[in-house]
Image (cartoon, rainbow, N blue to C red; front, top):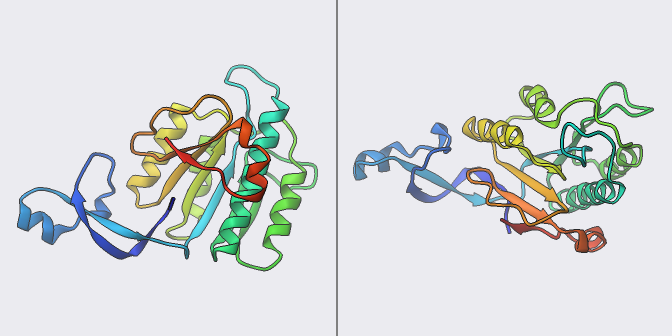
Length: 215
């Protein structure tokens, strides 16, 4: 399934629904039909992909880590990054913690360089169990500095209402967004934010391919 759409190639229009970015309104069709119409874009393999990895595996206010869930989050991030790079995406990685060798919160700038996957894997190898900032706050903090049109994907074992609200705001600003929920029960529909599920049983399948099921 295609998670992302190309903001240049218009495939058609559909009725507007709350949550659509005003930048996607097709005004000529709106005027002709007398009701708001939203542009539908072609699936793309040429976008910037911003991967945000949430290291939290327990619901607040609890601290600590569920090792299996964190490992599955890391495997998922590595698999998505590898797939995206092979498909021609420029990929960047952001992790909501400070590691031993990172200068501040973990950031691997966007690139298509042949060594980009190695850089991402090295960053993932240093991850520990403690978060330094809540993931929604990190997304909001980094969003103004991401490449124009960059798609945002958050990989997490604990999706929150605040995270969904943050990504909905990003969507209304014209970005493509998605949540990949790792482990646990199949998520409820993400509403206006697409939610995908990687099950515990698929942990090692994800090493070879992306095991995504849209909710």
